[in-house]
Length: 267
Image 1 (cartoon, rainbow, N blue to C red):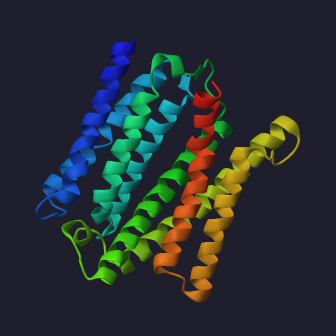
Image 2 (tube, helix red, strand yellow):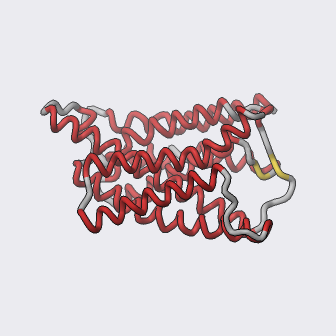
């Protein structure tokens, strides 16, 4: 079983690896090679999830990370199809996905595998799907924020390099961040509502103030505040990018971070 799990992990990493070089080609372009490699990237993680979840509903950290990798790559493909400049984020997003996949591989051994016998009820599945979608959208927004910071630093120093030339312009990064955060805030709001409904159904209260809830609500408030500031004062650029990264940090602590503490540190 351990050997087959290792093979699955390696296959998933192997399909992600070529995409990490897309943004570092001599002449990066949104050509046929780009699309072939990009569409192949999530195949391994999806196959990993399909195989791993056959034996039961996985709740361990390794499965959580592979789910986030697969979902983020799928959302990125959709974004790249819809937006003419989004593909340029691949030079940051793909190495990030590969790194998270490596962490998922490390924490996907037999000792850390956690399953539940029965399939969760529909509302729980909806809540999980919404949480995954939120994290994927904000992950891509954080990548766009990093791209904006890298571009701005290169412009200030008047020393652009091949890496920054392949990234979207600062203004396009701002546009991508805004659209992703608007979508992410709506989806996160739905996630909070479904979470409150589940909590109320179990305990009769709408919010259980645990670490995950506090961190997620904080991220929701930060993103909402950033959007309000943007529409009322035109907040963009470096300051906005830093706020996005702070919101992403809280969301990461609330999603895989809490699971890391419960599954790895406290196990």
